[in-house]
Image (cartoon, rainbow, N blue to C red; front, side):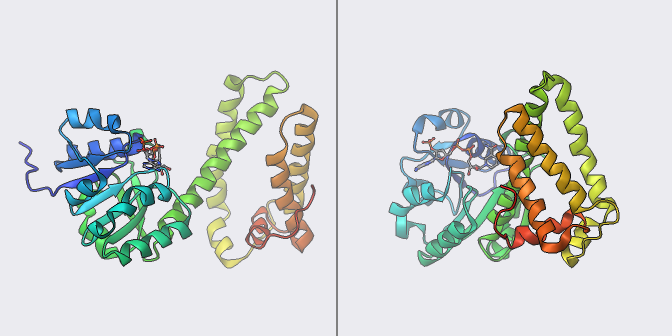
Length: 300
Ligand SMILES: NC(=O)c1ccc[n+]([C@@H]2O[C@H](COP(=O)([O-])OP(=O)(O)OC[C@H]3O[C@@H](n4cnc5c(N)ncnc54)[C@H](OP(=O)(O)O)[C@@H]3O)[C@@H](O)[C@H]2O)c1
């Protein structure tokens, strides 16, 4: 028998795919859930399944000590919670929306000025994985708040606390999305390049995925993380010059194929900058030195 009667009420504001999945995970964990969304119809399914619909953002905040926000950006939070103002005092706001770290720092200061407790977060899995074992969420702000609400927040995904500075959760989130989006564009660019010669995506993508799958072993084998932290870039296995030549060939192949060349040009620019800075005999990891302090773009 499952008894969840002592779980505290939680409010979820913002019912896009993510907010709906969060509300469902919280309800499945036994929390009474109050919901509010700008477009009311998006709450209909949740209300049919037992959630309570608040008539206004102020009523939604008042319904629970803890309010979780899942919105397009932090401007949406301003639009929704700005008019609530003093009604936020004493409440805990957990904003799991995306924005720049600086924007989230300003929001934390604003909430503190109104007497609210505030956590920033970034959900690191797509909507279907919310509430599963694989889900995790970066949090920043007061550690005591994450600890206090760990059981509730854990229903969405495992909390990974990254620091007191409220900007850190979105910094980690954006850095991860940097990897994700760049990899996705790289896959599509490569597929288009192969496609320019009639190779189908069905033929090419499995090969490209094999290349992606080989990267973790390559990074571990070269002690990449340790060397990056130490600023050491030994070029004994491959050099920036060799890989920069390949980057140049990709630009040439893309130009000849008549496809977009912005992405390979950006990568060639990284290699050109490293070589111009004297890293030609170093490893490809030396590119981080020019990425950290970008020089005038090279090779454009
Ligand atoms: N979807 C994913 O797989 C995923 C994965 C990881 C992280 N995230 C992040 O999670 C957040 C929510 O994602 P989502 O996919 O659920 O997004 P979404 O479908 O775009 O939903 C956004 C929500 O924000 C509301 N909203 C936007 N602007 C508003 C405004 N000015 N005033 C009031 N409400 C406003 C929308 O209300 P309406 O319904 O009225 O338009 C909706 O409830 C985003 O920050 C996203 O980056 C999403």
